[in-house]
Amino acid sequence: MQLRTFAILLCPASLVASFCVAQTQAAKSSANPEFVEQYNKGKQALKDRKFDDAISAFKKALKIDPACADCDFAIAMAYSQKRDANRSLEFADKSLAAAQDDMSRAVARNFKGEVLMALGESDASRLKDAEAEFREAIKLRPSASYSFNLAKALAMQSKDDEAKQEFARCLTLKPDDETAREARLVMADPRRARSEFAPDFHLTTLQGQPFSLAQASGKVLVMDFWATWCPPCRESVPELKDLTRKYASDKLVLISVSADEDDRAWRDFVGRKKMDWMQYRDADHTILHAFGIHGFPTYLVITGDGIVKRRIVGMNPQQTIVHRLKETLQSMPELEGVERK
Image (cartoon, rainbow, N blue to C red):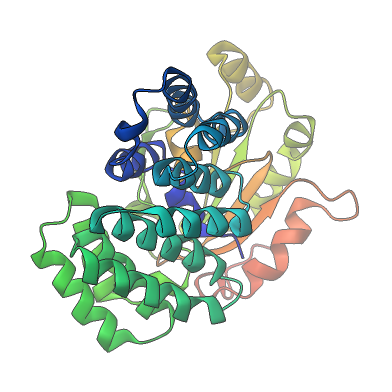
């Protein structure tokens, strides 16, 4: 299973926001120009998502001031972006040990909980540890986001009644709009915390057709993430055509989302290859980031109620795309008995 929670940690806005909340102690070392230089280098590298550079700069700052809890916390965040959970937890613990106020301790506890919750998707034993970290963070400093994380950890452990109570508490603490929206969704269907649900999205296809996740409700949605410069993506076009012929459009929806920067090259290729199903070029990569797409081609099979049933990354020379999808599609109740002969 993909570590979906790491997708939260990878969000640039939340990354910078978490660091800004945490950086309460570094000012005490501001009299040392060398410290300030390395600290600012690390901060900028973190913002630019140059995580190795950020780690290097903050480690240099730590040599000057070994008690800089903010530096440890920033390194922990950078390692989380590199998907190195063990090193991330190591530096989160160092930040927690060096923290001198409850706000910094709460931020470090919550961060540890997020990393542990990500690990819990493949190792359920880590979820209890995540739950404990979120509870400690809330004791130190009640927060809508901490309550939301605790509720999610509870739901992931199938403690649905406790989770609903905590989501309700989250909503009383004035969460931001997105957190409130997701809290209400998971309260209504706790499976959302235990399964990978597709994020909501809205787009207008090359054909001028508005499309959103809601429009695929009750149908199977296959999303093809590709680019014209990707040879395996180009090779899969005939198989995707076959897929559109195999199932009725009112039962299975196929949409290809391109990562191309060159609009003309994309339009020319789509036209030349007669790719007459829904096509969209994700110019600013908003949808790619929302779905956590890191390689091409990537294929997602999404159920009629929005659960990502399968994620296929890359091509397999031993099996066609349609063959790799076949077992998943045949097991889906939405497609029972509707395969075209």
